[in-house]
Length: 290
Length: 290
Image (cartoon, rainbow over all chains, first blue to last red):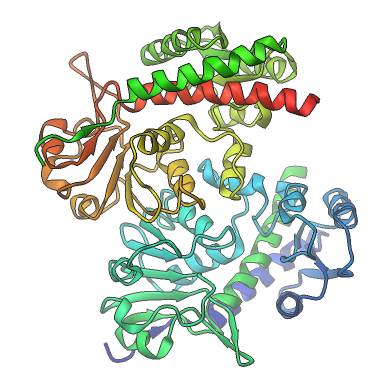
């Protein structure tokens, strides 16, 4: 195929933010301002960028996003104290703890503390357990954003062969579980590949939809995909100061029927889903109070 | 291939029970008798059989298994009261709630109440969440038994293409998550198929190891598998009063390099893993107390 459909995450995220702004306006009219908190501990340079993009994106929606910073020297206790205060604070509808945490703080020990009702990143064991039990609460932002991006571009998921490259806890594994749920957002036949997969190319060539979240720049090249494949690239690798995906766009795009750009594909969708979860959390709180 | 290796779950389970009996003897010498409780609510005929096989299997190991019955008319409150008393009871090291529950009792509402330290069936959202987070506590009995049966028969899992037919919460989905963990019990390339999979045969023919947990008698027939495949049949269907697997043994076995019988394959392993988890729970309690 000559020109694949570009799965424009920036445009889709903008549309979602506009929809959210309308829902926030209704909440505000009812006296509720959706509140998002972000805990940023340490100096990871990528985290600084991600957090500021989250704050920036919130602005247009009316969600009130506030960042709390802790130094690289922060302890588990310091983090736990903040998490627990947010669990209790009625003005906080949802919050996230930006990963990675400083060395020496076990992320799972922190994620365990997050109240499921405020876990807008969907990464706590309780949220992932609900997903594995087939009844998702908040689902993780990146896989949710990938599904949303496909559906908004008219791409059918149900019944398709989806191959996921990467078995991480943030994208690959939760996405696999989500795509196995019943309904139009799931019902896919799902294969998960990773570093131990023999002949990755052969596995990828079986895909009708290929999602790559491996964390290796340009891992997937043209000869590894079949003609007409839909390609979603969740990679964010820094190469010579440039953001580069896990897919070699130049050789893969000519064979694809649709493909995400990097940047401007999955990234903006991740941020939009975080805001969508925050608005949903605020709406649910009101629902619970009534 | 003419004669496949029969993956004898009965023999493997017997060996496991003998190993457990030695560990239980040590526990008893230290003054601890591992205690398992089984809640059996209602009159499901298959459940009666499963529960009695669990009790019977416990006898040889020294695990003390006690069944508590509730009538078909039991409420969620009745079940919850028992679960909560077992959560507190120091003589109960592990317990299970036999599924299905009577109509009208939401199983998830019950599973949520089970303390992860006593969840020897590994089916509570907390246990499944730990698994999805990559740090399993107790893992579900059937998928654990399948992995154990393969390894005890010298079958390599790591790096192999495993196809799972069935996306249920008891077998298919947790098995997929377990096979994606790192190490020799995982590291597989995993595909999950189900009722919405188009061309199930084509998917199954890609398998080096095929695990079927679809709940449909003789769904998989000879022409749907490749020569030399390892076949694990987790199906337990009742056909004309006989226990029949999801695999058509007659046509599949001649093509397989190894295959489980039904009965005598996965079933006994499930029971053995439940007992193994109970002994582990008792050992961990002592470890925590010291």
